Image (cartoon, rainbow, N blue to C red; front, side):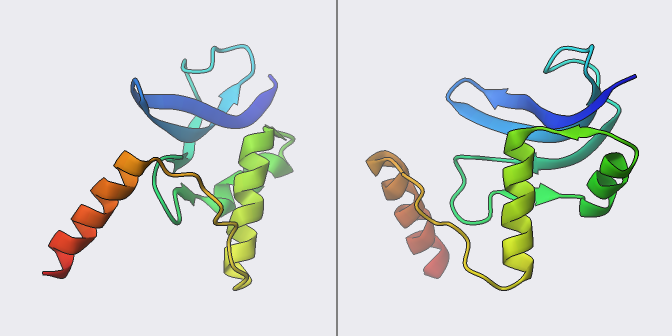
Length: 109
């Protein structure tokens, strides 16, 4: 059995989010998986992921292959743990910026 640490797609159309999972390579992308290892939401500003680093390290230790996107998330996680600034050149649409500003304004007072 060949295991891969990869993303599965969740969420609605035009509002994507992903789960980081350990899955058998024979199963489809959104199909059965062995273990849920975290989440990733590309539309969310700032820190838009959460990973269980100990479990990912376990799966890597037993020979699981890590997908390129999950590798980049691991790299970002390590940079934030070291205290280095995260890459923040995300493109956000005007409508999304307006919604975020409105939410921040409502939260402030």
